[in-house]
Image (cartoon, rainbow, N blue to C red; front, side, top):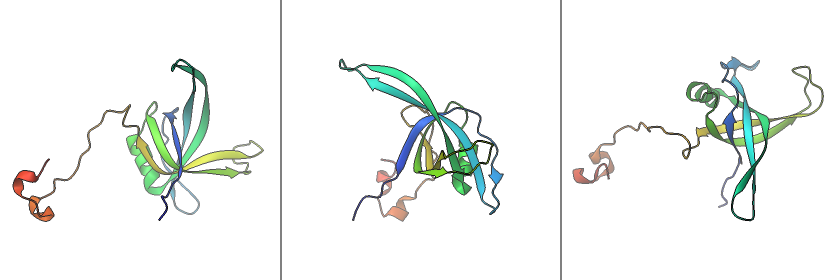
Length: 135
């Protein structure tokens, strides 16, 4: 069995996350602008910052709701999904444009401090002795 992979995007949310909107098909949609930093590794092991680029990230339904509810401008985000190219002229710009359609989003655990709230599991449910719970 092969490992399922998707494209991944790592960057910072560059503008406030707008309220979700509904599509013509009734899906929930959020579109945000991401800043993607670039670096060049030097021979001595140091890094030189290069010019940042920007891209559009689009999320639908549950992912859109999570993006709106949990992220804000400046957050470092990791997203998995696909790049979609279209020639549509939605905002007055002609020519092809790319959007990253996110199927999964999350904060970068290295740069984000947070607490994970998990439901407490009963020892009997797992078939473990009571002393083993919480290890």
